[in-house]
Image (cartoon, rainbow over all chains, first blue to last red):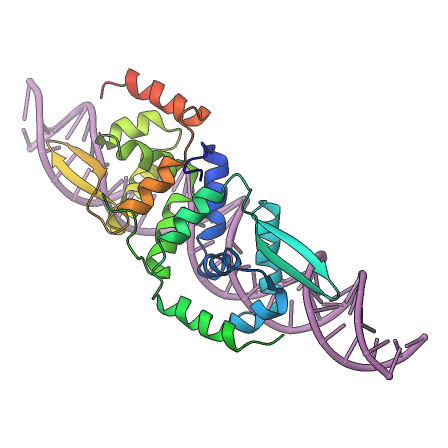
Length: 114
Length: 114
DNA sequence: GCTTTATATAACAATTTGCTTATATACTAG
DNA sequence: CTAGTATATAAGCAAATTGTTATATAAAGC
């Protein structure tokens, strides 16, 4: 279990930039727990499908997620081997499990069949 | 030693927003180590005095720093009792001690007599 | 082949950010 | 009181961000 990674200022701020957006922070929280296909995420968040796709593209560009095509779906999940994984996990670990927005998302997640 | 703080999505993203800027990340790194007056910081960073003042104001608004007036100087230092202190320390702990920008700053810091 | 479904990309608008220069404020020293 | 130094605030601007709608791409089912 790595706890530090000695990130450069550049890498560190790049990662914070990705997570500073509420939608992207919560999206990443979910992706660290299990994989999701885009349409599931679109149903859960109150933004358009292109908005979700654009967020996922940012993660991918930063090496934070894996993308896997299966049939007509694309599944995304957290890349646990990325350089920033410890940072991301520490940040997400600070999020209140009872945070209203997070709880609402989890409730929606259960109801979705995509 | 607290390790988690159960921050809301709002509080968490607000803090990441503050630290995602390279200048502000490094500035905060220094402020967690010792107090600085504004003019020292201005001499160390390659931005104008108002830019530094504006960054410090953001920290203060978020409760991340203390400000103390002594004579004509204002000293700033990290507020170790703020709600986000563990988060901030974890993030800054991920920064490479040998990061080029950080090393350059520390070198400058030694040379400054304000 | 055509249609539907899932997803990505492009183009654009509104907002925010991070600096700049100019100016105001406040303390210090003579 | 005046001049100098330290700092904050205001105004303005260019670049970046985050969403939108419209459109393209690609797989699946008939």
